[in-house]
Length: 426
Ligand code: SF4
Image (tube, rainbow, N blue to C red):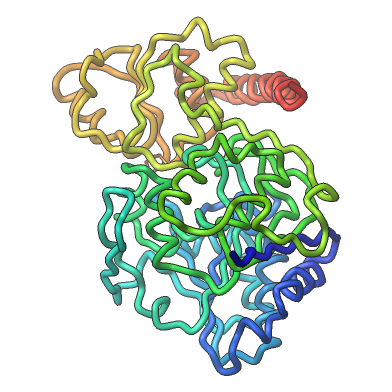
């Protein structure tokens, strides 16, 4: 059996690291044909600045574009479909990706979300409930796809790296359905029909903690590249200390027969895993089973609200407010009715703009509940709504209250950071 090749390059210069990583795969000219149309897919799906590591760093995106240009392609298109509730161009702008791509000489930037020239593509032997996906024609007709994710912790899949980044080639309706089914299986089905020619992973400052949106960047100083997304993801997990035998993703890969993840079957080039290994705090292995004292109804919510809730639960623990609020119901995402067995009142918390319709229905019926607005809601409001039960801090806009809110936030942040450091050491 032929081994999958994955390259790891540690360094400080993104251009050199990306070039060396791809050289270990045979070099960009062996991967991209002259005159070809090349689509580059970063992770640029959330509105957040480059310092947050929420999106692929502009330095890696521009390094990849400059490298691809060495192969004399006909056209380079950067394409993305942002997360539900986000606007793609606003995300590319705030992340610095748009500017970096333009400076590096990209020919076109496309928002897959608003593309209406779509082709229905069937999933072959699907392992999830999804049977087809609508993909943009320009992506299917491109000669090459280059996948440029960042490694982050991810509430729905424990981590996001090469394969999960492909979710940004589908539109909102598919994003939504994928989150309402087994996401790992759905990603394998998608990864079976959308196969990048190669992937370059930004592990310069990957995200630990409460990703994909509220985590913490960590200096890691690596770029990882390869053609087998599963082998890349397995390697990134080994680099960060994530036990792959406990991550559902790899069972789904085995079921689908997609890629290789056995260590013996992966040839590492460049730096070894041992040379670069650094444990990250990746807290989602247990999923929401980690908080059995709360009744959490999240089946219809996207990963951003799920991640924020996970973050909020940890924050309540850190602030020693967890136990006293246990037993309440928290509902995320689009629910048409109050989940079975749930009572309305101050012990029912609806989170996010998606649940606004349900709040209106409860109001109309004369019931009450607490609602945390926003898409996603702003941190630290969820923890405060749960802890204060209806006394939303933003209700009082007097100058004194604003100062109190800031002081409270700063004091809580200090406690939370100390708690996080303890979890990391544990
Ligand atoms: S409100 Fe929350 S669940 Fe709904 S789209 Fe926004 S972030 Fe996702």
